[in-house]
Image 1 (tube, rainbow, N blue to C red):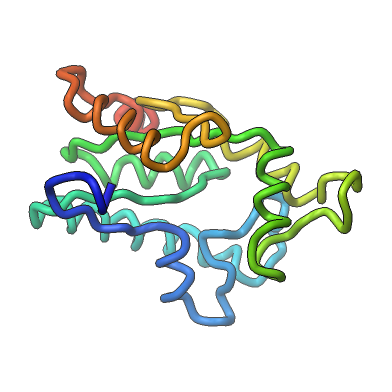
Image 2: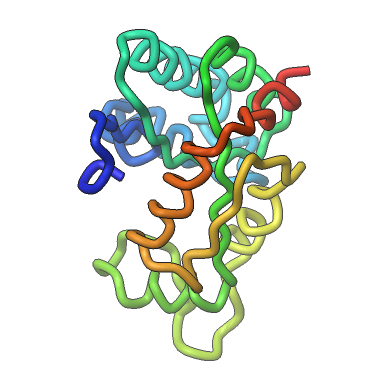
Length: 176
């Protein structure tokens, strides 16, 4: 989107937020479901609130924003949605089968992602929890599957939806 869309698109999401988050609060908004006892857990509502307030501020300043963020807490997601009130914000569900996710993780920089110990090993429990929780409640304005589409094709699907006259509704629904 940053490379092919005409307007200026800011990339604000989990990776950017992680860079700003102090070590004692890591992994910040990347904390997985089932890790409620993690030292970072109490900070999640504030971290998500600040991120979404930043997204809204960028939008009010006339910049477009793409944010790669996963949600697994309904109350935090509802609060985030309320923070975007008045914005023309679309919620895009990004899907990918777990087998493809694991293949990509195994091929990435060593130590960056949790992976199975070896091919054929069971999917790590935290990865399964994330895969199951991140799409609940499953309310989106649009969905893309990155196992079927490359990044450019996903961007084109999103571009077509942005050019559509049908307004976004997912965040409005989630806010109530």
